[in-house]
Image (tube, rainbow, N blue to C red):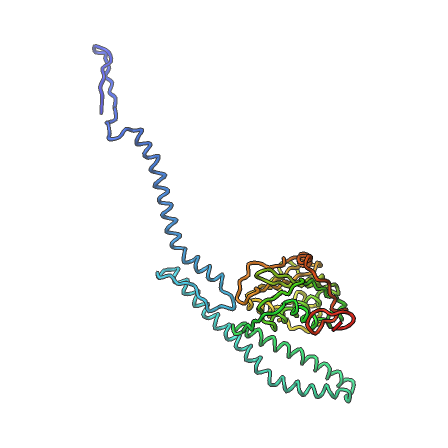
Length: 382
């Protein structure tokens, strides 16, 4: 709207024209306030819509990632979810499943090969062993070189038999056909029986094995054969790498679980090797000589036996400070573990059950009684 004003009179007067905004539906201050509120709201609404759309698009990718994280070498039959839509994400899921198919077939072929070879080797190995036993039994009639050869042959055949048995056992775990024959057992008795097997090696190494046992039985539903095998492996490993120092075995239990910790004071475990020690044929120092004739599968089989029980087998170690291997098992078959009665650490495993210790038993000086409990110096029945 234009307004005209006259300033002055006569011929020298001036005319001033000014422009005034035409009145609208809403006053100008109200328009500014409305814009100040509307622009952030619209911006936020667009941002939320963008986030919602991206989240909907990427949700199948996250599901694929989570499923892949849970797939291990023992459950390659699992597959990632395939979304209904046929876009890049759907094609990705199909490609991942196709790769898992090929991987599962390759692993199955490898497992079948190991199992078949292990079984096929048993017959010729049995024949060779029988022949070697005959030769070894007549070694006194042989010359020095032939006698030594007979002794070497006998020792290597025994080691090969152990290796073959371990290969068969690990192939059963790989094929998911290993079974659990659970029954009620006192884990303290299983510990002492396993230690009796390690006594000869401990005597050769000058190692004393001390037991920290609770006064009451630690009853759990376990497979005796498998648990004893786990404990023998842990004790042999502790004595082998303990450099002649004491090995401490601690047993503790709570309402839901029972645990055994084997502590050595040897060379220890370097950082990052706590999981590698359970890998097949892995050795911290390949140049280090072994005295037990192990196959390199002991801890790997022990880990599988623990998992078969629904339990844990964990390791702690530091260089020159020794190591701790802790076995934790549910007291009831099929039970779920929420924790362990023993902490995993250098000295905690030795003192955790100190208030309940029966005593310290030296397996070199104190034999094991026929009932599995430690005896005295006077004899197994005293």
